[in-house]
Image 1 (cartoon, one colour):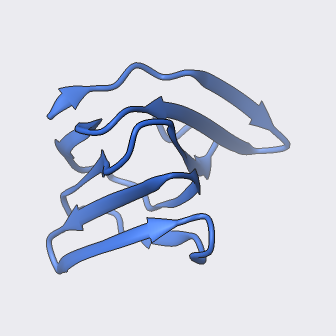
Image 2 (tube, rainbow, N blue to C red):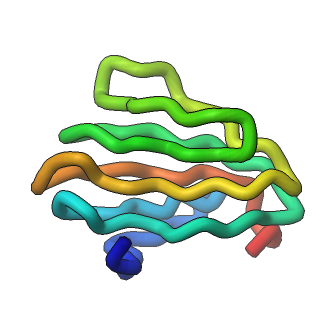
Length: 92
């Protein structure tokens, strides 16, 4: 999977919002954090793979909680996909 650069990062009232614009096959390779974060897809479709399975998400899905300490990866399934990660400030 091609590593995706961050498009926008905004910190607001204690939350960090990272926005990614991806084409098919791009995303965030397998990694883990010491903190949980939400992932949501605003355009296109993503597959979120994690220790306990995988899920395909799109704009109609509720945000997906990625649990602290579990590996995960996010890959765009379509060109023009936009996904967002949200976590508490100071957790990077």
